[in-house]
Each structure stands twice: as C-alpha cells, then as structure tokens.
Image 1 (cartoon, rainbow, N blue to C red):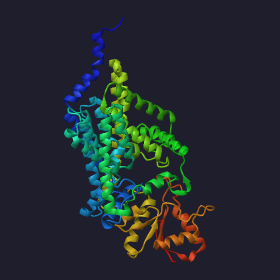
Image 2 (image 1 turned 180 degrees about the vertical axis):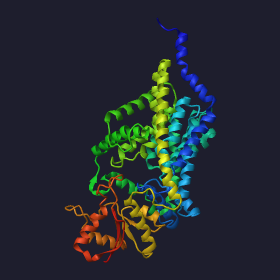
Image 3 (image 1 turned 90 degrees about the vertical axis):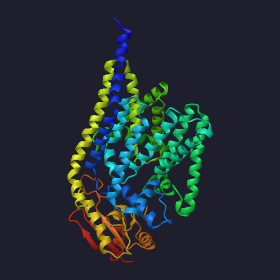
Image 4 (image 1 turned 180 degrees about the horizontal axis):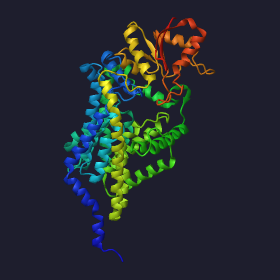
Length: 556
C-alpha cells in the first residue's frame, strides 16, 4: 500500500528536525568543538622542528628578511608567511615557542572565521562536519603547533571565504554598480592577492573565482574581480621591485624545481606534457585514495598503498555533490567545491608525485567533505531511514577523528613536557638527535666565520641559534658515470662559496626504523674527495655511538 503524502513529509522532515535542534544549540556546540580543538592542539603541542625541513626554512627566511634586508627575498615558495615571521623575529628574536604559539592562534582564529563564513548557508549538520574537521583532525592539530605555513594560510583563506560569502551569498549581495560597491570589489581583489602570497598555488584559486562567476553568467562580476586582483597584484609587484630589486625574482627558484623531472636532479631534464599528466594521475591516487582516508582516520597513516578505484569514487562523489549544489542553488557549496577542486587540480598537475605530503590536500578537505557529504545528504533524503544513515556516517567520521587525535595527543604529553623543561632533543630518533646536537656544536665550537655544508641547513640554523650553514640538496659537480661528485668540481664549488667544513650525518630514509639506509647526498660528495684527496678532509667532531654525525674540516 502506497504511503500517504503526510507520511512522506514526516519521513523527509528528520533533517529539518535535527538541523533545527542543532541551530537552537549552535552557540554551546560551537564553543564545545572549538574548545576541544584548542585543548587537543595544546596537548599535541610540538616544541621541536619537524624533520620535514620546510618549517625551519620559513624561520631562516624570516631571519634573513630582518638581517639581510633589502638584499634578501624568499623565492622558494609564497613569501608572506616568512615576512610575518620576520616581524616576530624583530620583536622576539628567533624564538621557536613564540612562533608556534602564534600558529595555534592562527588555528583558532582560522577555525572560528571559517565557521562564520559558512554559518546559515549550509545544512547545520554539514557545517558541523566541516568545522569539526578543522578543529579535531589529528593532522590539522599537528600543524597547529608547527611553523609550516598551513595555520597561517588557514586564517588567510578563512578571512577570504568570510568576505566572499558575505558579499555574494549574504542579504545584500555585491552588484555591478561600482559607485555603490567599489570598496567591496577592492577588498576582494586585495584578499585574492594576499591568498597568492600565502600560497603560490592559489593562482588556481583565482581561476576558480572567475569560473564561479562565469557559471552564474555574471560576466561583469568576473571581469570586475579579475581587474581588482590585477590592480593589487601589479601594485605589489611594483613595491616589491622597488624595495628588493633583483633579489625579488619571484617563482624562479620554485618554478625551476617544478619543471624538472626530478626536483633534486636537474640533469634529468625538464618534464614534458605527458609527464605532467602522469603526475596528475599519480597524485590523484596518492592524495584521493591514500591521504584522503588517512586524514579521516580510516587508513593507517604509515600505509603506502594507493587504490585508483578509491580515488575515482572520491572524485565522483565530489562531482555529484557539486551537481546537486548547482541544481539546488546552494551557491556557497558550489563555490567552495569549485575553489578547492580547482586548486587540487593545479596541485596534482604541477607537483612531482614524490612530494606526497598530506598537508597539500589537508587545507582543502573541509570544502571537499562538504561536496561529498552534500551529495549523500541530498541522495539519501528520500526516507527517514536513509537520512539516519547519513547522520550516522557523519557521526562515525567525526568520532574516528576524535579517537585518532586523542590517542596522538596523549602520546605527545611526555614528549612536549620534556621539551619544555629543557630537553630540546627529546622525541627525535637517534639519527636526528645526533645531527642537531652536532649542528649546535658547530655554533658553539667553530669560528664564527666558518661555513658548514650540510643536507638540512635550515634545521641546523634553528638548533645552532642562528648560525648559517651551506645547504646541499643534491649531489654537486655530479659525474654522470658514477652518480657521485667529481672531487675537483666539488672542491671548487665549496671553495668558491667559502665552505670550511662538511657535516655528514646518518639520517634515515625510513624515519621509523634504522635499516642502515640513509640519505646519502653528502656521502656521494665526500667519498670521491676522500678517495682522491684524503689529506684534504680532517675529522674534527663526531657525535653518537650509532647513526653518528661527523664534521670534517676542508683543507684546500
């Protein structure tokens, strides 16, 4: 017997009832989730530099902005975060704990503003899902106390989303009457320019904004937002060139790396078109089948398995959500999915697959989750039972993240306690402990004018209290036959750059296990020199009984 219309309406109202209850209690729920996030972030506080290098690179760049101004401009990637660290360096010096506390501040403010940006514009249960991801995801919490650019970018992106949402989806949407709304267009253009300074890849975000307006057939708005962005971008480039001059050739360093087949070996040549498409499909597998589910707590974080089918399902799910958002005129979700999706597309296309870092997709996960779950939310809306399924799935996802984050936070407490009490090396594996200790020794024991070549120069800089090291990222003066340095070429390069010492460490390739396999870049430079000119290298310091770190003096 067919169900009556009244019964159908009653079944379909479960969403409304739940969303109404959540709306009524939104203030305490907001403060509970935010407070839980900040509490877990403090328990997860990492008082050390990560082994990933980039966080130390930002700190060193901030120092150089202060002490080498105006002859230094950061070109490795987006320069805005190092500029902010330069301000903190002027006020507090190179203070790692202060830098990290500001990252937690950015995390809390970014989460709050993101919540305000989507409030009342998406179903309440989906809003809480996205907000919960930002506040309690274990990786977000990890970066909340790091000096990577992610917490800073989260804040910048949230501010942009807040104003874009307010101007386009609020009660008084922005129009094409410039006499009335020119200030709004200028603010959007300024924020878009700031986005590209916070992350270079946000150039694709600008494309998404224009695409959104074109999709709405608001061609004038697309032109206005592009023009506004261009004004501030050109103004910034003018000011940059006036202040920094030749040292501000932006993108040169990073673009050169991205165009290479191997980011560490330019001799392999530049990537061709087929190679970039290969990167795209490889990165789709890595980020949408492995990292996506690791971030949700459904896959072991150490897993190296990728599944093309899972990546395909995620892509289809996001597209389905986008389709329903467009169909149902939910402009906020439409924009956020376009924005995140376009940036992910650009990221997957230009980055070498070997990077495989979850932070590249982490910052876009809230928007992707909104897209995926909005599709499910609509498809499963036809019966009360189906509605309960999607609610249960959302609760399962949030619960999984809470469990993952809590376990890591509790495990971190003894580590951060010892770090804050003065044992700054506690928590590192022996290879890193030896490396950082000998870096500190270089600052304390070598002459001030000495320059030490090493594999992780920015990390050495931080733990050596601001002493500069000569960075080695690939084998210099490489002999194509041996894949090691030509000893005469290597020595000539070192002498030309005034290098006085070399730091050789046994940094593990597998960070969780001592397999004997180490990062051998420096070894492949030193071995040919030691073989041909043993008298030119003198051991001056060794630290560690195993996985040792050693410093050699070069006698030219």
